[in-house]
Length: 160
Ligand SMILES: Nc1ncnc2c1ncn2[C@@H]1O[C@H](COP(=O)(O)OP(=O)(O)O)[C@@H](O)[C@H]1O
Ligand SMILES: [Mg+2]
Image 1 (cartoon, rainbow, N blue to C red):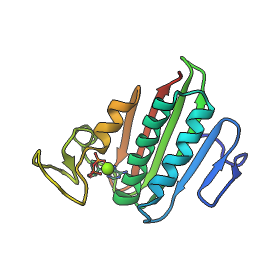
Image 2 (image 1 turned 180 degrees about the vertical axis):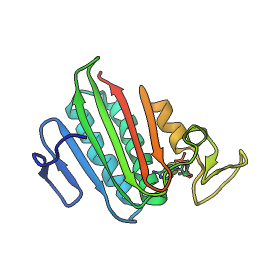
Image 3 (image 1 turned 60 degrees about the vertical axis):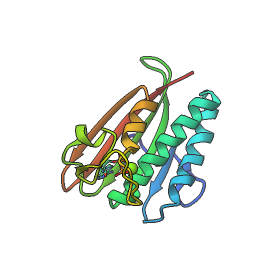
Image 4 (image 1 turned 180 degrees about the horizontal axis):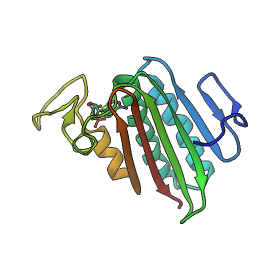
């Protein structure tokens, strides 16, 4: 989305400059969601989100990272500060993978891996509530997906 050449690599997954952050999700390590959340939390505080809204954005990053790790092949999550139409953090999570056949269904609570789960489901494969939480914690959300190619999720969180 924006040139990453100017970003400085700060560890093998994280690159950043003054205005943007890029976290690479290249493997199947479920714990990467926590590193991603931590990088996003720090970034969000730096660009002026409150502690509470920074934590919300960290949870969002953790859910999106977990989806890339568990449901796709590889991807990257990028954030940058944008001033228009009002100051916000823009987050873009892109992956290569199977894509989502029905994105409107996938963002509903209790929908996982192509089916609706019973309300009291206790599944270690996932509860199907990640994208529902993401939707509630951001100010704008778009999910674009091409089956067999991958998924791009774009969201905004207003500052302050
Ligand atoms: N990046 C992705 N690539 C492919 N499928 C995805 C991706 N993100 C979400 N999905 C699909 O949408 C469903 C709902 O996602 P989510 O609400 O996070 O629930 P969960 O991950 O617990 O199943 C997933 O079960 C999966 O089928
Ligand atoms: Mg999930």
